[in-house]
Image (cartoon, rainbow, N blue to C red; front, side):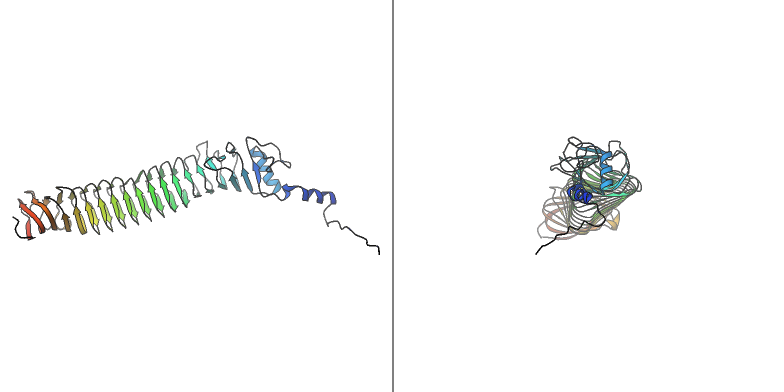
Length: 408
């Protein structure tokens, strides 16, 4: 038997072209490779492949367009890709570890792309104006968005963030801020944990941190609002006319200060220095430990829980809904402005001096091992006194004596 084999040529494809197509990897390539140091110029295959990376931006753009590829691999930590015009729709991925990755220079251009494992800069100092996404990138320059905004995932900001009007900056997952984190009238949102060595400042815009926050600088606010929905470790909080709200535990190295704005902490709070207030309101809906003083002028300080105070209590409108424990050897309290100075209970294991108290002010004081001294400057008020202590009342304050018998 004679068997005849017939080879059928693919329809619509010339035989030589067909052979060329299946032997040319550029036709099925997943990425274009770029290396500005060790690459080569040109647009023909094999330029742009892993073995012969392209070395300039113009040829890179042409190769991506001609081959229909939307992913670029940047090789060599010394590589710099500098944009010369607007660009959208390309994924840029850097090879390297430990911060030794290629650099992308936005060069003042409107870029809407995705960047992964790269160092990002803008040598012109211009603002980023398009919507891009950055994943595990080192942001070397100050990032500012005048229109639109960008998303950042697990990024490190070497010089901080500055957000001017109309901008929106979204940070996801773990972010690190080495410089200042500043906002004007735009919006900055951090969804996830963040750590920073700079300051967090806000004017008329909004800053929202939806996760744990550790800042070794400060939080300062003017007319805008700052919200932290999670635990935070901070250096200090300072507020003017805006609103600072922390929905979680808060540990501060220094102090909490307020002018006409409000500060609200919905959780336990540890303050390394002082809680100071003028005309605004500072409210802690939980327990608080204050290493320094609690000082208030015409504003309100409200503690809806127990308070441990190492310093003095100087009060105009202080509300303590719980027990206040004074740790200083001879602390001083000031209860003035009448009934607005109601304190539920004060506990101290030493002497205590009441510097000011007026009609309408009330307090429950439990003193152990010392002397309660009421100065002549106290013109009224009522104190229920408990404990094992002595009493010296030189003022006009009424003392209901519930002490252990045997003390004068």
